[in-house]
Amino acid sequence: MPRPPHPPMRRQPGLLRRIFNDPQPVLDELRAEHGPVVELGAGPVRMAVIGGHTEIRELLAMPTDAYRWNHKFNVLGFVVGDASMIVSDGDDHRRRRSSVQSAFSRRRLNGWIPMIVDRTDRATERLVADHGGQVVDLYGFGRSLILEIVVRVFFGERLAGRAEEIGALFQRSQDYLESPAVRQLPHPFPFTRRSRVRADRRRIDALIDGEIAERRANPTGDPDDVLEALVANDDLTDAEIRDQVVTLIGAGYDTTAASLAWMLWCTALAPDTWKALRAEADEVLGPPDVDPSDLDHTSLSALDYADRVMRETLRLHPAGVVSPREAARDVTVGDFEIRRGTLVLWSAHLAGRDPAAWVDPLTFDPDRFTRLDDDQRAIADAAWVPFGGGRRSCIGFALAQMELTLIISRLAQRLDVEPTTAVKPRPVGMVVNRPTGGVSLRVHARGG
Ligand code: HEM
Image (cartoon, rainbow, N blue to C red; front, side, top):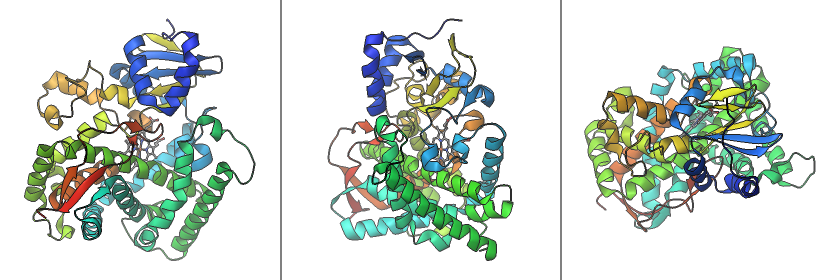
C-alpha cells in the first residue's frame, strides 16, 4: 500500500507554518495539487490531511481504537483538563461520553426551545433599543446571546445572570488556543499567557465545584439543567464532571457563535434568503410578539428553509476547518497507508467544497438540498460532515443545530439587516473558523 503523496521538502516549512496561521487556502492548495490524502512533515512530526469526502467517511467509520485523542500533539488537555472526553480514549472516553450524552436527551433538548427563542427576543429588543439604525458587529451580539443560552443550558437559571463573568473566564483560553503553536509549548513560568490561562481555569473550577456541592446539598429539581443531570447520574467523579462542563462550554460556545456569524453573512448578502426566512418564520412561529412558551419541537421541525440555510452555511463554513486525531497503528485511508504516530487532520472544509460531491460547490444555495435524487442525496449526506461522524462525532450537534435554526428564524422575523459591503470576509482561526472583522451590518427593527 503506497504512502500518501507529499509536497517537496523545501516547501514544507512554509506550508506547515501557513496551515496553522491561515489554514483554508493551504488546505485548498494541497487538495488541488495532491488529491484527497496528503502527507506533510517527517519523522515524529508527521501529519496527513484527509480532504476527499469518501476518504473522510471511511476514516470516521473506523473503530476508535485505530486512533488516539490523548496524543503528543494534543494542546486541548491543558485548557479542558485531562479527564475531558475530548482528550480521552478507550473505556474512559466511552464512560464520560455516555454520561454526558444521556444529559442531552431529546426531552431535555425540546425543553430548551422556548428559552432559546425568549433569549433571542430579549437580546434583539436590547439591540434595537440601543443601536437601531446603526452599524453593529452582530458577531459580538451572537456570542453574548449564545453564551447566555449555553450557561442556562448547562447551569440552569441560577447562574444565568453570571454568563458574562463565565464568558470572560473562557475568553483567555480560547485566545490562547488560537495563538501560534510555539506559544503553546508547556512551561511553568509565571506572568505569562499560559499562567493566566491556568489561573482562569482555577476560577472556573472553583465556580463549578461550588455549583456541584450546592446541587448535592440542595438539588434545584430543574429537569432542563445539564449539570444537575450529571451530578444526579453518579457515573462520574466531581473532577470528571468539572472537566466535561468546561469542555462543553469550550466546545459549544465559540463554535456555535462563529457559525451564526457566517449564517448572518450568507443571508444578509442574499436579501431573498432573508425574506424567505422571514416568511417561513411568520408562518411557523406566529407573529413576532407571540409568547414563545407555546413553541415546541413541531415548530422547530417545520422550519425547513431555516434548516437548509443552516446546513448550507455549515457546508461552506464549518466551525472546525480540520479535526485532529493520531493514528494509533498503521491505517489505510482510501488508497494510502498512514503510518502509526501520524497526526491525522480530516477536513470538513474540504469535504463541504469537494467538487466530486457538490454541484457548483462555492455558491451559497440553501435549496440545493431539495434538488437531489437518491444517489446525490447519499453523496451529500456523506460529504456534509461539519459535526464529524461515528463514535467521536459532536455531542452537541442537536443543540447547535437547534440554536442556529431558531435564532436565524427569529432574527429574520424581527430585524431588517443591511450589509455595508458586498464582499464576504476572509475566514480566520484554526481552532474555530470565524469571519475576519466579525459581521458589521446596519440593523433596524423590522419595517423600522
Ligand atoms: C456549530 C457548532 C458546532 C460544530 C461545527 C461542532 C463540531 C464538532 C466536530 C467536527 C467534532 C468532532 C471532532 C472529531 O471527530 O475529532 C466535535 C466534537 C465535540 N463537540 Fe462539537 N461542534 C459544535 C457545537 C458543539 C456544542 C454546542 C457542544 C456542546 C454542547 C459540542 C461539544 C462537543 C464535544 C464534547 C465533542 C467531543 C466528542 C468526543 O470526543 O466524543 N459541540 N464538534
